[in-house]
Figure: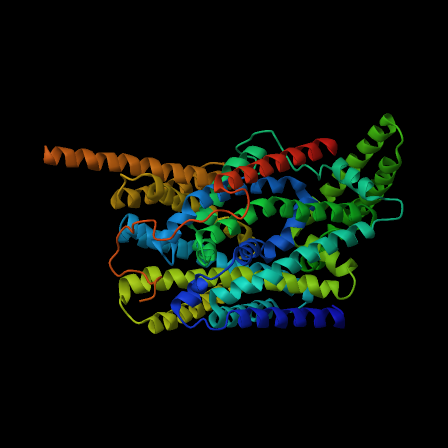
Length: 554
Length: 56
């Protein structure tokens, strides 16, 4: 990091936080603090929803995902526009008209207190874990890149998030996300332009695309269906739609964003804006990863991108042999890439492509052997290595600032939603109903402080979990199916009552955990399975209840 | 009382207290939804052509 990078990093942080707090001033009622007084316009909500999802770890790891596995990850988002349309037509008007603070509050209106309490607790567990991860993952990466102790980076991030969220509430968070999202997009486009600009003379934009294609990195659509394959068109459209329905329809961290809208129409537009922009944006991020791959065809990348793991692996006795294989494979691949680019006819192109793919296989083999000696995957470090080594002074600081503030955006949104559910669905409902607005405002700030501290402490321990981080990232899919199922019942199964819904959620969660534990079905399908089990069990119990009632009265 | 304050005793709230409004374009929400789904179909088709064109 050069002095200019530090100046840009600190300036952007101060500017963004000040702007958010200035826009969030006057949040001195519960309604202002948790729902921004229902005054937000669609573009602020839409950009904020997008910024919350495009958290730091997405920004860091998505280009790396394309580098390693190609662009097929984009298919995960194919179901999102379908979900947004369904939610805009159904959920948004229902929540607005029910005048609720939280999605779970509606469940008591529709079912009963125990179903609301169960679903609220499921949310607190799932989102509480995610909030810690949302802080830990970028803190680990920034610690490795900036050579700062992990404890420092996680505590600094945690303190900034706690201060910002406790002072500004949802209004500050949402408004800060507007410039944040614009700078995320600008820095991504800048990174893409620089990656293309840094290609050797004679390698055009089209050549780069052809080389990425020859390496199988431009596989944006995979038609082949396989239950065990995480990313294909079908799992993306069906599983992705269920995941997005659950995430945007039942997760308070998202629902709260569009509940701040000044009207049903504004909330709808914020979701539909995401429906239109999300897939192309993910495509852009993945395409950057593919271009970084092409850049590293000509400029030798490190054997491992994780600097700490690389230093450790270098000390092992196997390292010299692996490095020698890697260097040889890299030279062959570069020569084959140039040959493929310059090939004039079909037969020479095919021959060059075969050489290129063989060299790529050797190189992947050497990297896989090095990764076996490492304790951590290095996908998250690929894009950052490119940024740190090749981007000019100032741009590096900007990218790191964006990562920091993207983590802040995700975490503060999550902590605010955790505080909202804690106060509205648990504290106000079960412990202290009927207190003054000022009392609940203090309670909301205290709950924000508590969840912020919880996330920071959890984040500091997450470092020791190491590889568990990726596993815990899939925690959402273990719970979303149950949440989605109960909301589908609430909206569409008028005859189902509280007890049936309650046991349906428990059965759905058991089914998801059994699927995860005993089958190799991939996580995108958990949402489909979980919600269908909730609905089926609740309908059966409901029918049995009605049968018993009929007998009683006859 | 704050209009958004939750009720202490819960009940199913009768809808229509908050009026719907037309979208800023196309006149009806159903047309906007159709436009979004058409865009999705076009994007997937374009990505498919992109994949096929650059396939190894």
